[in-house]
Image 1 (cartoon, rainbow, N blue to C red):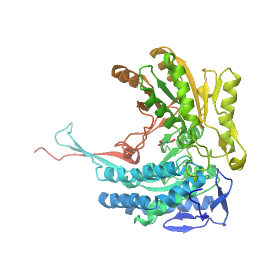
Image 2 (image 1 turned 180 degrees about the horizontal axis):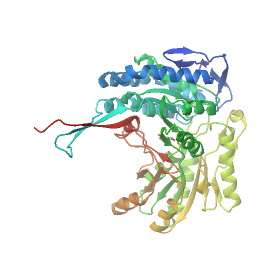
Image 3 (image 1 turned 60 degrees about the horizontal axis):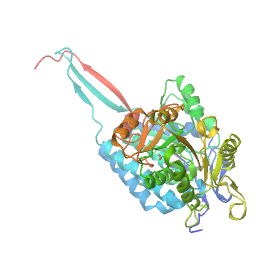
Image 4 (image 1 turned 135 degrees about the horizontal axis):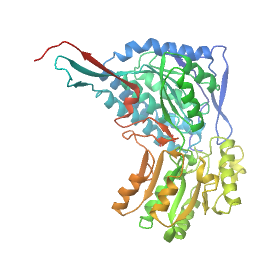
Length: 490
Ligand code: SIN
């Protein structure tokens, strides 16, 4: 391995103090590539979660009245510190999450870019002066921070999904309680240390790590001081949160599951399309919400495309994320491997052919990790699990199609609506298809669509709200209008 991860024991961050859980319970964090313990964190109790909300509520008046320029400065400094500590954070991320070190470094940069982007947005939160209906009145529209925010973040992007929430929250003047996934809490702690060292006042960001996600959610949803929850995770949990939010009518942003179609028309640049599909499908071992889950290839180029894809996939080394040259790291755990394998076996049982891979890796260097071969399946049909359930693994399933109408109908035949992709050189078709795809994100001749400056989010059962872009900060602002009567006319 190129780099090694020192054992890292972290703490909760509550009101500017790093602390253990009340009662002192902790849990271990495991390297999915080797089974080794990489560190531990406190197992927060309900009292700890409430203390974190207390701290966020206490910090709110000071933070929301801090000038935007000062908040922006702290965000920019946080980004600088993340970059300075990129190797340390990325090594930690690879050790607890599994992704290859180069991808982890890329994620640290991606995560830092949200702080930078929202520093700019903090400086440009404008209200309005509206023409009154009655000339004696004046109308102001104010945009004010929603208050205390809870950020519930996933394991697949332990840094970026957190900064994508904390960046706009801090920029808007909100204070936050972060609950990272229990598989990847160490990266979260390292990022929060950057924010703290950048000068964020005590209580602006608070960290609770816990194995009891239900208890944390329940505490957050029943505390009237928490005004908004931003969640990235499965559609199933997202639906539970929608139900839980009804009790106090809490604001929610939900970035949920996806099932992205990846369409390759016969007029596409095939080299670009293959690289795009590979980037979309196999990044993070297929564990992203925007991963291609169904590749549709026009029949006239299908065999050629399949052969070229298989050749490229066969060249991708599988290994521990800290081993030089690894392209496909371990999956997050054994259950994830089982799900990927279930989708492969189901497709083969229903008539698809295995074009490449299709096996767990369990011998030698793979013995103690959660590894699955990058896989290509030929001849996927709509009755197969892989065609409608999120695989979240390094498995590409290909389906041949004949016409544009047919493929649009197939692509839209999903309850999910997060990301979609297609390749064509015909610009009339490009606009037509982009408009007809029922997804929040469309990559046209592009397999990687994520960035801080774009509105990321889905439609249908992929959730609501947008993260990033110029609209990302709106999720953390309330709109208030003020009617000033009896001013008179000028
Ligand atoms: C996700 O998988 O939820 C996000 C992926 C990204 O931001 O690229």
